[in-house]
Image 1 (cartoon, rainbow, N blue to C red):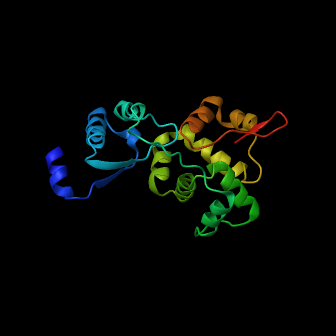
Image 2: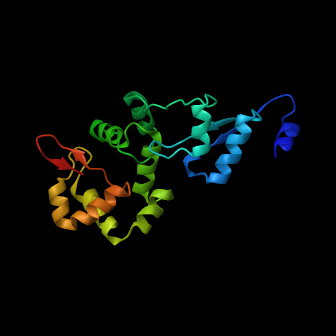
Image 3: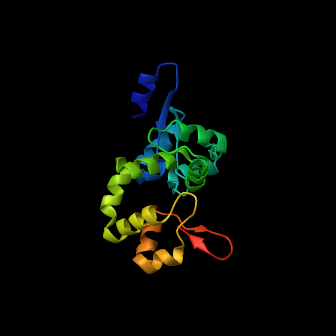
Length: 186
């Protein structure tokens, strides 16, 4: 593999972009780390927040051969511009503020929410595969809550059950937020 990379690159070093590095199997991560360590390729890898970095990359980092650059959330203004450019999304101040808050100012989170709302893409498939209890939680939150005022957690748990809410939160379909004043909401 090393000779193939050297032959194909000529005088220039190849740049290899790997999205979701945390999803690589151990063998693929080891090969990628090896070609990066030998400086045969310049690797740009993306790891989702909370994703487990493969051991091979951790070794490169500990030897100073890997640089990490955390990607910060977008500014509120940048997120509002993204929201304003989305077709079919309400653009009132309350909706924009709530979308910015719920997504953590992450454009991927915004895209996933919009896709889930439209029943498209991975969000729609995940909801289909999540099971009846999780779908019921999402439906109740969609009907009973709003972007301005979260649905009280205790009420939701009484309607659908604590286990269903836990499963929906664990799957990333809903987010429990501290409502202040001792109450939480979804």
